[in-house]
Image (cartoon, rainbow, N blue to C red; front, side, top):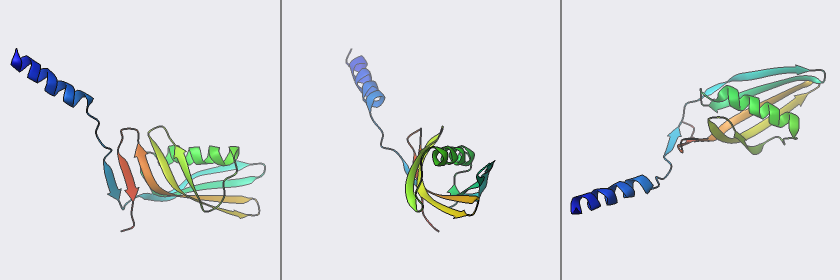
Length: 122
């Protein structure tokens, strides 16, 4: 009986324990033009830097939707929630006539699994 109680106690400790999110530093990422959108007002180009390969398209689409719905200031830090992760980064906007270029630099990726990745220059 004592063994069963001990096993149940250990099992409940493992089952209800909270694990701190694992923080990983990365210094490699994907850079490139992710999205080109044309409208009657001009062309919008979304580029990402230090991006994680699996979520770069989703985050670029979310940045485009965010830009269309609310004004984003250049050199501002924004947080974008994607389907697999929430990304925090710096957004630089350049405008020239009817061309808008949005450069998004990944700084922190918070995966839905709880893992956190932080970009550091090599």
